Image 1 (cartoon, rainbow, N blue to C red):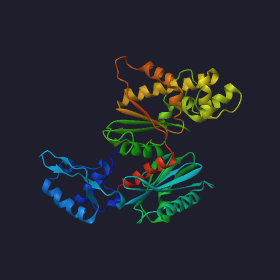
Image 2: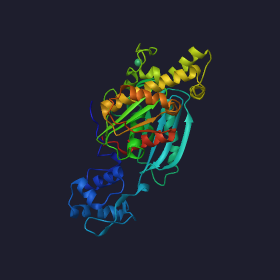
Image 3: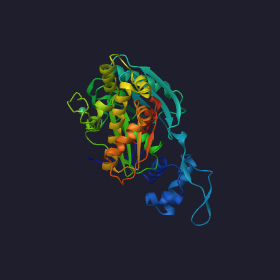
Image 4: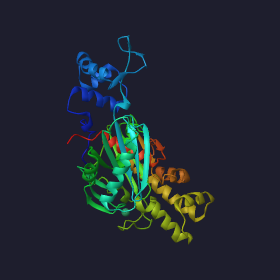
Length: 382
Ligand SMILES: [Zn+2]
């Protein structure tokens, strides 16, 4: 597994310099005292003052109002990046629609737009995304610095999409197609990476060194932060965690794995199992509702919950995270099968092992788009 440290040289911050390092540190960490900032960057107090003075004058950073007493007993004012100095557009792309959000440096949402995807032809989708970017950019007080796109699938360096099943794409240079249309830096990342960045930077996982993000929906997604850095590898975006075996008596997935995470937890699989055992199409949300009344629906949902519990224990044992975030459009399972999930977690856990805390978050397309924008903010210089 290759670790991918958060790039310290985003294109939009300009050439390497101590000033750029100060801006980036404040962007990632939020407001910092001068002493904390100097320590993180390995600068003396005098050097830091020389670097920050022009940034304060130009309005890139400010001294916050929250005065507190520093180690010397004198009141200090933490430094903070000015969120409105730069704007980014994040886009969440699915097989059916695209959602764009204009955000500032804190990823506060300024404007949103969305459009259905008609043709899956890459040129047509690039036209549509470029149009959405231009629409939300109108609400920005200044030109957008960079654009980030996230989607389900595998993305290689340089914004090339090697595999995106929902768009039926293979080896599509989507980053280049967008750059040609917009003339801006473009970053393309897997959607799980976007959500993981969002949660680690600004969400429930903020400040947490070791974090797991698990999503359920069309498939099962897995994101990982170790020592404050998101981990990706050449297989990221292929959904490999979806084939972890969870139930030896479960049905086989399309690759023949009996009871793997995909077949036990994904919405399409649960819906097809419901159809087979209940004799009629039962949408996922209805299946969760019906499970409260017992019967076949409860059996199916509890089996899924038990499998999810086992997956949580596997992740806890192998990764040793401080927190697991559960999300995705199928995350309603967490509430519908609470007892079964707890039973599944206990089933494989060492009796003395502490239970890793879990946070369940329901996210909309704008949330994913904000994560894509963070990808653009962190994009390294070419
Ligand atoms: Zn499988």
